[in-house]
Image (cartoon, rainbow, N blue to C red; front, top):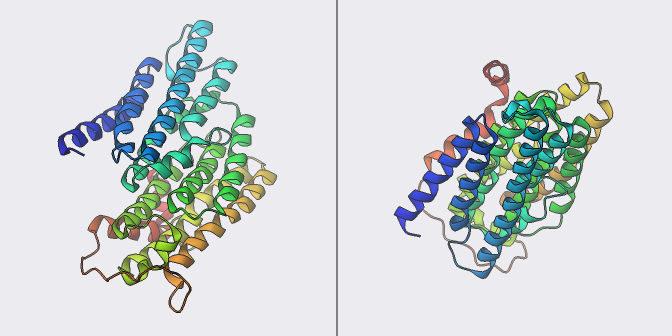
Amino acid sequence: MNPQAKLIFMTSLLLGTTITISSNHWIMAWAGLEINTLAVLPLISKSHHPRSVEAATKYFLTQAAASALVLFSSMTNAWHTGQWDITQLSHPTSGLILTSAIAMKLGLVPFHFWFPEVLQGSPLSTGLLLSTIMKLPPITLLYMTSPSLNPTLLTILALLSTALGGWMGLNQTQVRKILAFSSISHLGWMAIIIVYNPKLTLLNFYLYTMMTATVFLTLNSMKVLKLSTLMTAWTKVPSLNAMLLLTLLSLAGLPPLTGFLPKWLIIQELTKQEMIATATLMALLSLLSLFFYLRLAYCTTITLPPHTTNHMKQWRTGKPTNVLIAILATMSITLLPISPLILALV
């Protein structure tokens, strides 16, 4: 892709995100979401492969439908209350419609069908954008309207997302699809706590973004798209593979690593809200996604020869590891001991 065109699309992405995050009026928020959608479409379809064009079409249709629902919800609210302010969403029907619209934008179950397909049709760099920065504006809208959202609906969406995100990732062989289902599962954890403690949702999102960025950038630098290629990648860059192993375990939420922090705090908050059954169910459902993270981690580092893969061994590259990957990986692995400081900052 032409560098100037890429610069324009990336600037538009940042502009759209900034407009939505900083707006108080529903129309401005909607305009930001639309700029975002239009800026990311060329980045999805830049390879001109039929799969990429299909992914871009699916993305456009779902995001357009979700944006229409956001407008519909805000107009219904304005009709009943005379308010266009985002924080004044007091009409219950508007709250329900908005929750559905944001769920569609984020890819929460049962509006998740587009997300794995779109991620599979996109390059890894665009996949990173779709999994991280494109989720920020909808989550910000949820954060701003959190006092007036319906807790029952969000709890149901969150439980379904965590369950299906885990189950459907179990039999995948494509790394991008596994990461898509991982994203759906993490969004479930964010959605369940948004009504009770919105700041925890944002903390979870920041840490998830950091860990996912590490995984995507590592896979991109190793040029890995499916599990069979991942099995032979250890000969290429052994240090990156060790980083990837630890980051995947951190994404799974295993205790000594950063990823344990949001899960621990969310379960603690749910217990404070006397939602013991929900907290237990969420903890059990996270075991499903732990299984496919372990599978990825196993393919990354533990499949040393002799093993039965038909792929050629790859030459070891002498290139040093990217500094950004090194910094992100270190933060994705080691932030748990300073969790009191993180909580003080949030």
